[in-house]
Length: 77
Image (tube, rainbow, N blue to C red; front, side, top):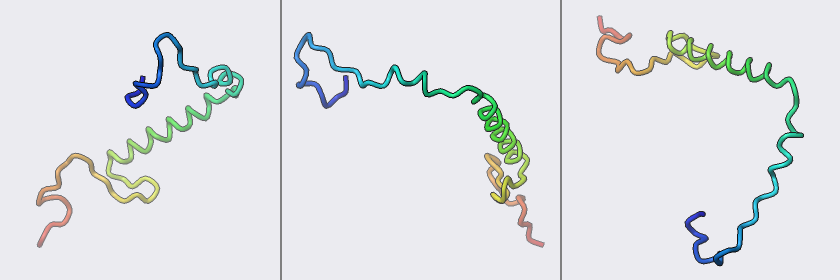
């Protein structure tokens, strides 16, 4: 039960369920696995490229968790 509804319900009466449960199955189209798979692959690729410091779709170089000290990139000289 959510916090704000405490005083509203009398003992013994059940709250109505939202009527969504039965519709879920018929909605689902077949052959969605392929799309999911492609999306997952895309994500993996993105991650890999981000790790290597290569821009993915023009996102610029992104190095994560390396804590850019003095030596990183812009060296004075």
